[in-house]
Length: 471
Image (cartoon, rainbow, N blue to C red; front, side):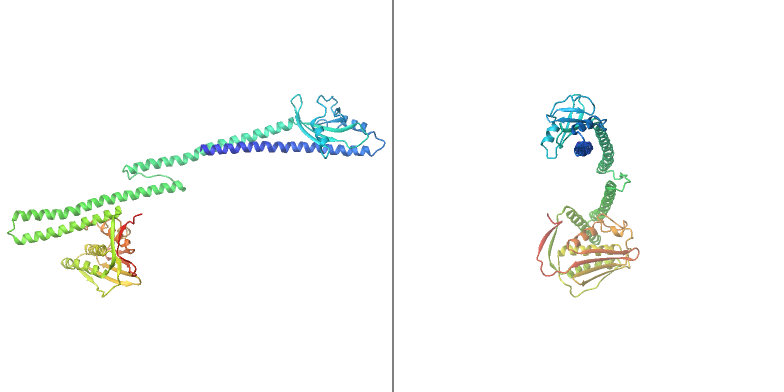
């Protein structure tokens, strides 16, 4: 603001100086032109006198001076050949010096005219124009025209003062409007600062209120959107912690319960011990899978997730994932159908991570299906891609939840077991393989998960890749 005001002041000062100089030249030129018009008029008159042999040129010039019709505005003087002023139209003797500057200039100029602006002894400013008389046989060398500049300077002063006044008004307008403008920016920025500090302190309910459609309005909307996302993220995190705590508590409770049971009955009840050990083994495996899922998610978030990519047979990993869940599906009264393919092209990827994705997707399909439902797994080559489809006839996903099911911590159905990060991790792994994971679902009809992975073009070698890539 200070720099801008300084530039405006400098510009106005330059404009004022330029205006004063230009207007002065304009008015002075106008006065000079008016005087020269009188000079030319009188010069023609003297020429007429010179052509009349009955006229005495000197007498006629003297009469012209003494009876000059414009003497109220212009004083006419005659100058002899010695540079002395002999007669004046006012009738008063001239008190100034002989050979005035404009007369000297006229003597030395090609057109016989001289021009001078000066001050009288009284301090009055004047303009003088001298024109040489070219007619011979007379006692006068030149005629001098002198006009007062007091009225012109008075008008110039008024115009300059008016311009200065306008400049002051402009400066005041700039200061006032600038203050309003700066305040209109500073106030919302301060409010943004207060709002951001509240959000940073954990108050996720605070929002910016700004009705304008300008850039500040967009910034306020962005801050509100950020607050909404942080609030949603915080809510999802809390739900995730609660869900994980519940998921951890369930197997731990089972392990603790069966451990106490086995300790209390001893090893004599072989059947009970076997049953208890199976439960402990299954729940321990479940805990291990859950911890591994959490570790994978943490690695992805921290950029420490590694892929060991090489040429791989995708069917081998898919068949292994299906085999893992075949017995469980039978036990739960669900049908797991795998349409076997004899051969598919090789892909380039991390086989352990790809198998992890298949396991997660099939596990979800069975988890969200009831007894009597069917889970169908297929794989096929389509153009330059491998397309793996896992489709179930389970409970499906509500339309409102479908866009968010791949978000971290998000659980569309809280009645089912799960941490809410398995699908997010699976989606990230597929993306790291330059593939896609899409979900189609209809509530109470079923869900279809489609995974596409690019076929290896034969140019890749084994690599270990960090995700996100190091920069």
